[in-house]
Length: 259
Picture 1 (spheres, rainbow, N blue to C red):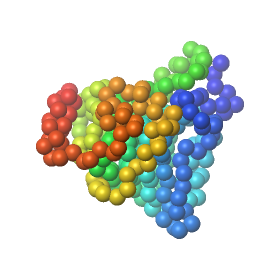
Picture 2: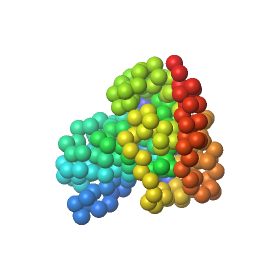
Picture 3: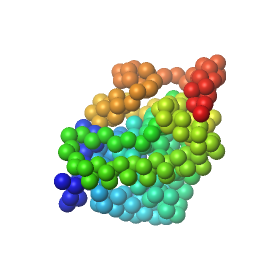
Picture 4: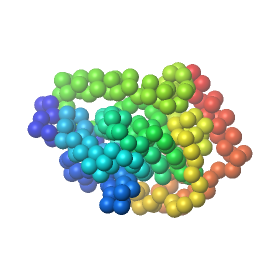
């Protein structure tokens, strides 16, 4: 039967509960609010869920008070429908949202990241884009529900493509090809292709225990072209690439995404 009674569909195996926020707030009382997405966005789909989006919007306006907000992201992605709705809510928010990618912004997390006014990325971080998809964990869906999901995904892709084009200045053909081929970008590549504005160097590393999060690991394993360093969950953070390596990677990336 179709999803009823606001009972969200689980997308990724993990420990989260339905309607449980997958974001945290800090520095709210100090007047310099930060919202952190550290993990999957989200373990449950926002498909036919009108409760969780209301919670997110309410907290954004209540804690941000219409002023500037910093958003930290370390996420392998998650539910593309949730990310699309978060983007819409962020776009309507009157204050400036500065995004900082600290470890990974992949898949649905990129949709959220590019919705900020300014996008900064740590020098050791990655971004990845691909065609939208939905992973349903142990859910029985009928034809009507699957049809609705198909229509939602098509609508989301129709919205993502122009958003990426507008953000980067790249053509629809190039962006479409990057999405089709699941393109991973280092921090400098993300800036080179205008998915991010600035590379940040130094400072503290992103938390390493995220790779022990079941949903986080499962989301990464669902992708095909994950950089090997990210799949070595016990490894230390990688040093930023030297310029020779950067140019070599950029050359390979340009060749791979040719329409």
